[in-house]
Length: 292
Image (cartoon, rainbow, N blue to C red; front, side, top):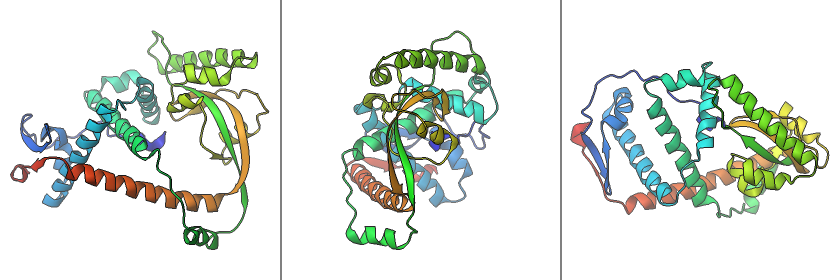
């Protein structure tokens, strides 16, 4: 999950604002200067400060809806990102937790995952059909070459109950747990049932079923080589450790699919942007520009 791999771990505080100084009201909620003081300190113009406040207003609106729909991330997702942050910055989890800004970091992760869950919820039933002209435009700008894709079911674990605080020993505990699951599945247990019961990834609800993936790295090559019913070796993901089974395979034109996916992504993003704009238009918002 590289989407959140870049977080600011240490803040260099400049001008300090009063903790109870309100900069904006969004319906019944308030935005304080303290909440966005670091971003405001880094702004170079009044317009940049307004953009920062506007972005925070959108965050407040989306977070309220996410809470109403119970779309907060589960602890395993948060822990998976924290583990990856510790690895990326070559520090232990104990060191990461010792930073004075750690509670703020947790809040950032929670908010961003909640908003991502909310975006997926709003667009999950959206059906995007490409026009013949859009498809033809993709075809005319690519070289036809078939590429293999696979679909897998996976069980991803980001944490297990253990009293050991070291990253290495906690990772070993996860690997030991996955090894036990793999042994049971090899003996006939249902992968689908185990995924729904144990996986700590949102795909658990579908038995760990993934989207189609291109076979373009060592991990997908390993998964592509699996035989029917064979359980993979334990491998690392962005959010934890995993085991998998290959479910299906197909050949597609990678450039054509990428072109189509890009168009679909832009259309989905436009749909969500318009939805968010309507949400904002229906909200009571007041910004105290004199405090900027």
